[in-house]
Image 1 (cartoon, one colour):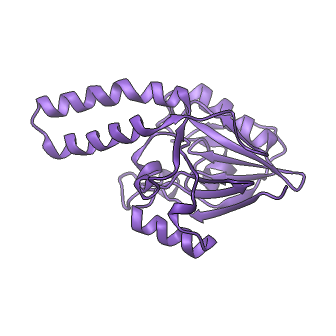
Image 2 (tube, rainbow, N blue to C red):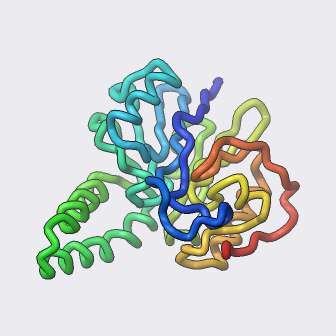
Length: 234
C-alpha cells in the first residue's frame, strides 16, 4: 500500500544560536508533516496558528482539517501544538512518557500563576492543560508502515515517527534534530532535559534513516552512514 508523506509547513527556531542569535527574533514553530496511509490521515506537530495551518494544509494537499483523523505531537510544547484546535474531530496523540512528564509540572505552573495573580499566564497555561488532557497515549503503530520512534532526551518523552515506503526509511525527528545545521554539525539543542539521552537519540535517528524530517527545518537526505556521535549546542 502506498504511503503519502509530505511536509505541510517548514518550522523555525525562535532563536538559532548557530546563526549567531542569542535572543528570540521570530516566533518559533515546529515543522508540520502529513502522512496518509490507508484510512489514517495523520498530521504531526501543527505548530502554526489555526487559520495558518488550515491554509497550508489546503495548499499542500487539497484537504481541509475535517479530513485529518489523527494529530500526533512529537513533544508537548506551544511550538508543536499551536494550531491543534483546528482539528476537533481528530484523535490527539502524544507519547505516554511525554504526557506523564509534562502534566504535573504544567499543573504546578498553573497553580503558581493563579496564586501570583498572573491572569494572562494562567490563561495560557489553562489552555495547555486542556490540550494535554484531550491528548491520549499514542499507539506503537500509528498506521500501516507508520510507527512511533522514541527519541527521548530533549524532553523525557519526545517521540518521532518512522515511515517505511519505497524501500526507504523516513524519520520524523521533532526537536531531537532541529535544523540542517544541527544535523551537519552533529549537535543537539542545549535545552535538552537529558543531554546524554538526546545524543543517543540523535545517533539512533541517523543510524536508521534514509530521509529525515527535521523539527525546525525541511525534509533532507541523511548525510551520514550511522557513524559519529552528536555533540551539544553551544
